Length: 324
Image (cartoon, rainbow, N blue to C red; front, side, top):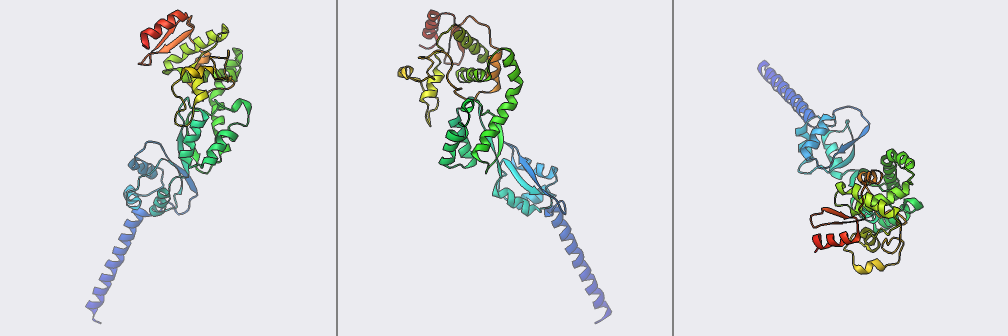
């Protein structure tokens, strides 16, 4: 082999080696693991976030080396909200695979004013519960204590493991209630109001109010009726009695007022045996900070504006004026 051929071979081999090194460096910069060894961590994707923003978070928190490389590994898949277990020792393809498989924790949003059956429906949908699991949550796990049958399953946004038991989910909600209710507990005690009494009233306020602005006035009217020994005559209690799947808070019919149950505030004085829904903090606060009023009656017009009356005659006039 001539000297020139040897030089040519050396040059070609060097170029190939350099090319290979270059390819490796580019590939590693796009798809390589950020760290050599690392424990698995929880990566949370917030609600209502776009995939591009979630990828930026992955990069910003050091889970991927390159946003561009990860987009290639992820393909056309949208990153779903929730929590994922990933490690900084994973390459882009491994991380993308886990995210494509779906989160191990799901966001669950519980609006204010739902009864526990409605909450069970949301949980069943988001956590993929069977009918039996949903029924157990309603009849067992939320019925283990007399005072916890309703009202303590606090409305909030939760991040829940998909395999969490129904009992643990119920306790999670109760723990959140205890945390949120704690600042009010001492105030209710000082006002000589039992916590369960406050929660019953708050549940009525929550279901009756057109908005949070109405809540203090409705609270004041409820207190007036209670202190005067009047029947509360609150339609929401009739809705609670007759509610069923697909129509938990339906239209109240006149015959409902004759249903014999302690929840019927048209038949019986005082508060129902338990809250009729799970109220938020605005309704709880309204119990403590109700509006001082002489009104004993109220209604909402078609625009959800509240109108109160001191006498039944005034209330009838409001009905004629705003509802007919």
